[in-house]
Length: 293
Ligand SMILES: Nc1nc2c(ncn2[C@@H]2O[C@H](COP(=O)(O)OP(=O)(O)O)[C@@H](O)[C@H]2O)c(=O)[nH]1
Ligand SMILES: [Mg+2]
Ligand SMILES: [Zn+2]
Image 1 (cartoon, rainbow, N blue to C red):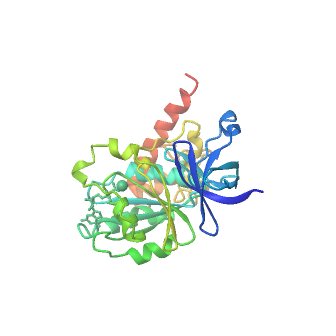
Image 2: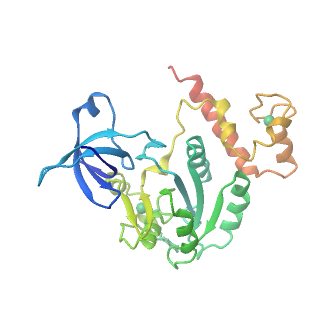
Image 3: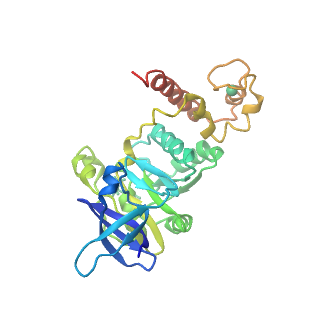
């Protein structure tokens, strides 16, 4: 008889699955998965047959995924926590790409500005840039422990995944929130990427929080299949303006009579967001036009 659970870890062909009662099982995937090209992912809801005595059991079926990411390989995230800090200097292009990734899959996005003990101005700047996109921005310091309770409350009920540049303090945050002692690295060592990329992914379920700390989101590429025309759809701050653009298929990229351009000139849109949107649009157009090469 099949039982139901969630994959919390995958290593060397063995999957650890936890059921709703908190019991863990070690499973092997049926050959069928490989034949059909299906890769079980951490976060997957599955049906399985437990093993008898010391034997491993069998992963029988993967239930439909709510969201999926292949780099890092995780399924069913419901909230992406985009983490920034003043050190290393914020990569806002990465933040915007992460938002595109999240919004395309209907994943909720939350932005946390860590290390606010070092720089109290950054959270306000990010609030200005991202609140119009409907993103909640939280200021905190994992080191000082400030702002953690607000973050904890925002994480409840979600399968959370921390994303952002190496060195912003994701692991420190997850440790502070869950009481686990995760591997953290000082910023000055962040170029030694080997250790990070070999690290495996696991789903932590502690103190009422479900969370993934993965290094893989730090170099996000938008998928080639994302049509340039669809990019504007995942910029919530553009949507109310769009009906006022002269052209219905306005890409908000210097076309005449563009309401986004007018709002930008009037200072009613964040210029960085618009500039980076246009840069991403150009990149997607390029990828799209060469997608069969
Ligand atoms: N000043 C300060 N440093 C922090 C804070 N949180 C983390 N750090 C430091 O930032 C460095 C990188 O942290 P880590 O958690 O490994 O970052 P990750 O690469 O995003 O997982 C470590 O040296 C941490 O001690 C914070 O709130 N304030
Ligand atoms: Mg880390
Ligand atoms: Zn327009």
